[in-house]
Image (tube, rainbow, N blue to C red):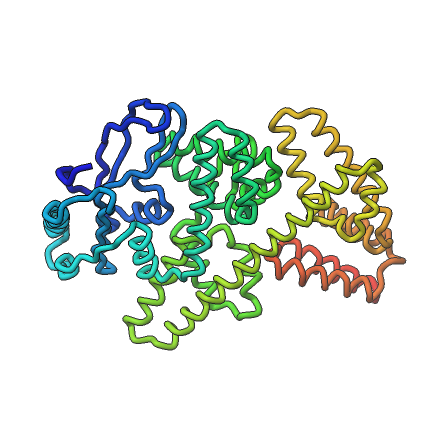
Length: 462
């Protein structure tokens, strides 16, 4: 790579030869990531999608070593990375920096600050440059370490998938299994959707291949969970984000800012899919605006709330991961047993919603892959599991389930009145406790439905 490449925030097309299969192909390469000129580049850069070439023939992915400048006029950032492996002479390095600086000088509007362009920051590695950007964005080290781990694991899986070596892919999955949680698959879906939207077909195909391979390795339920969070299209497996418009997002931010600490977890449960880098970027902008306005109390509150959001979301994701892992372990026990009913009964309290959700996700994966016999086995287990659960329920619990499955409010009222002998103060208390539990998890509609049952039952006592 030479420094004679034109300096522009737009990517340049270069001719490469795949190091894996020797196929020649063209790809995009950036020498300048100017997020002032193109804000969409920030997300691509921070997610590791800039200057990565994917062979269209074999899918082999490799990072391109090239001098790179990052510019953000709003945050006064002018950052330079020149890979040491290029062994560029000092005069060539200075020539590259000078060309970028000159280009940016001309691109900035009249009156805009240019002082940061006279003092570029140089970095020994691309990762250290990324860290500097994240620092400026207000992204904590905990968030970035988790994100970096996900990107590293995804890169390893992509390389293994591109090699067509199933043994290598399985080995990689085994060694990196602890990183393959709901957050991993949510981010994987985001990357696939972004690649499809930006017409980077080779990258989208490779990442989709990784997801499909992981679905056959026991991760179908986590993929389904992540897909549900992002509004995924279950028919074709392609993720599709359901992003709020600007007004909705402002309402979400305002709601989180005003929420009591006790309400925070419930609010976050409703909007979890939208809490990503872009979310924290907007939150940081609010802190900066409050600081500039001299509102130190609000700036302090926003800073504290940002940490509360991070800690709460992390705990929620860990809880979801633990739930799915427990459901998967329980399902494996049942599948290995000789007597399905006895195995299901032996699960005790572990025969719960998590188990049924994991079972449903595996059934969906079996149907998608055309494994008819396996699908039938899962469906039979599902029917039997419901029978076992129903057999263990108290009359009150059966009534609650029947009410929840009623199609209309009129039907639930009829069911409640036909079971008047079960309507007691204890049942009303159970309705309200379940409503509180669902409200804390963000299921406001279910919570309100349960409270309606409590009100109707209460009226029947008088």
